[in-house]
Image 1 (cartoon, helix red, strand yellow):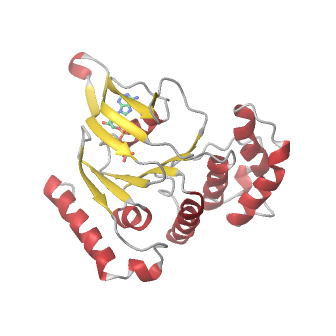
Image 2 (cartoon, rainbow, N blue to C red):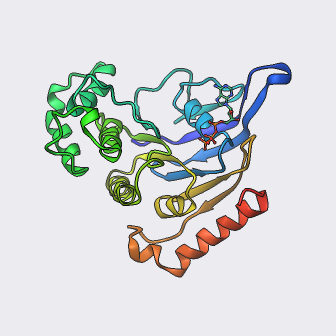
Length: 255
Ligand SMILES: Nc1ncnc2c1ncn2[C@@H]1O[C@H](COP(=O)(O)OP(=O)(O)OP(=O)(O)O)[C@@H](O)[C@H]1O
């Protein structure tokens, strides 16, 4: 079952005294089970800080996060995470890197061999299973990282600008894969992006984050048909969402 994530009066300040940086919050937000929620905001507004706190990798200064009512107090192993910079280790093959995510969770990779092959095929990396990361392009490495995030079949996925460094074509192709995955399996997805268009295309809900300290003042339900393919992206309704969100950022003075 996908989890509902409740964020209650959450804030984060780094450091103390005159050097303190109030990075994020306070924020209250409920991310419904099975929704695809984007956090869209300017650079430095605290999006990554929030993601780390949701993953249990960073302690909040105030407030708390709950997964289906259970307070996050330690790193969560039941989620899949993908960052802008991939976490592939250079000394393992692509397949070995994906298996590493299982091993780190105390799972035996053997029964997952078929799943790893299917995942690699789904991102067009079949044939590269035995290669090492340095033998892959940046886009291929990110596609391998996508498999890493999914291999243990997590019901919650945290993506922190996973497509930020990719070329436009690879980016569009992974967006399509991610959308298809979400439509079939309906995990809870939290997705950080700078791209208004990407947020509108992928999300059921877009949370607009203010400049630092990030607060979520607007949550916008995106009522467009799925899949959000080229045709939907060319529709007047899609353009209107993008235009309205651009207006919000213009009012914040960041556009
Ligand atoms: N470990 C840290 N120690 C001190 N300050 C930090 C730390 N991590 C983040 N910050 C500060 O917190 C603020 C928010 O950073 P964060 O990386 O969360 O922003 P972001 O919205 O993800 O930015 P970007 O979109 O550019 O990746 C920034 O001002 C940053 O300098």
